[in-house]
Image 1 (tube, rainbow, N blue to C red):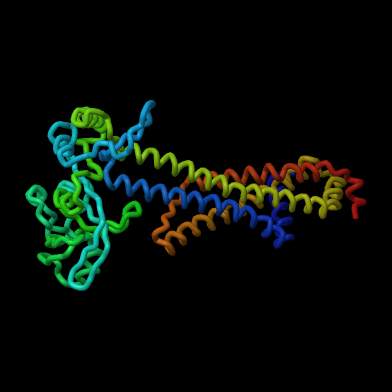
Image 2 (tube, helix red, strand yellow; image 1 turned 30 degrees about the vertical axis):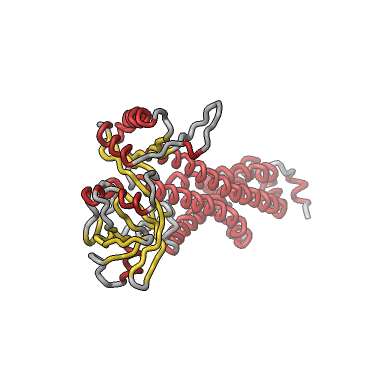
Length: 400
C-alpha cells in the first residue's frame, strides 16, 4: 500500500470521527502550548533581570564590610568588624590605578517635608560620580558637586515621584525642604528611571555623602561602589583593592561582589528555573500521549471488522501498522501545530495585557515541542498499531 494511500485513509478515518479526533488532539494542544508559554515566561524573566543588571554595568564592584568566608577558631562579635569609611573610598580612588571610580555610599531613610506635605523616603548619600556609574542624571537643575560633598552642604536632589508628591506642578528648585529634621535646599530633580530590580529609583532622594554621615550621625559607609576601567580588569582590580584595604584595616574584614559574577550566577539559576518549568509542562505532553494511545486502542476495537476485511482482501500487516501509526502521528502533529499557535499567541497576549510580565518565545522551545509531539505520537501509537496489525482476519470478521 502506497504511503499516499495510507495518508488518504488516515484522513478519512480521522474526519469520520471529528469529535473524537478533536478531543484527542486537545491533550497535545494543551501540552505543547504549556511548554512554549512556561518557557517564554522563564526566558522573559531571565532577559528582564539580566538586562536590568547589565544596564547597571558589568564592570562594577561592590565592596561591603564584613567577611563572608568562615574560618576556624574564635569568632568575634559582629560589632568588632571594622567599618568602611569615607577615607577608605578616597584611598581606593588614589591607590588602585585600575579603578575608574570609588564611590562611598551611605544609606538611610527619613521623612522629607515641604509645607504641609511629607513623605517617608530612602535617603542615599553619594558623590557626584554616582551619576556616571549608575547612569542616573538630573533632568532639571543639577546634581551636587565635589565641593558640596567636602563642604557638607545641605543640598538635595529629588526623585521624580518625591518631587510630584511634595511640589505637584510647582518648580522645586531653590526651595527648602525638611529631611529627617534638617533643612535642605533642592538643587535638582532626577530624570525618571522607574523600578530597577524591585527598587523604585523615582521615590528616593540623594544628598552629599558627608552630609548624609552628619545627618545620620555615623562615619560608617553602607558600601563602596567601584568601577574598573574595563571588564577585563575586574580580577586584577579586586586583588589591588584587597591589598589596599587589608593594609588599612590590618586584615581582610570586607567582601567584594562582582557585578559580572552576580550576573553569571543569576543566569545559571534562571536557566535551571526555565528547565524546571519546561519539565512541568512536559507532564502535560505525557498525558496527551497517553490520551492518544487510549483513543487509538478504542479505535482499533471499533474497527476490528474493518481490519479483518482489509486483511481478507490482501492487506499486509505492514499496511495496517502504517495506517494506525499514521493516524497517531497526524493527531500529534496537528495537535502540536495548534499548540504552537496557542502557546505563541498566549505569550504575546499575556505580555500585552500585563506589561510588567515579560515573555520571550524561544525558537528552541518550539523545536522541542514539535519534536516531543512527533515522538509521543510515534511512541504511543506503536502499541495500538501493532495490536491492529496482528489481529487474526477470521476472528476479526467474526467480531461483534
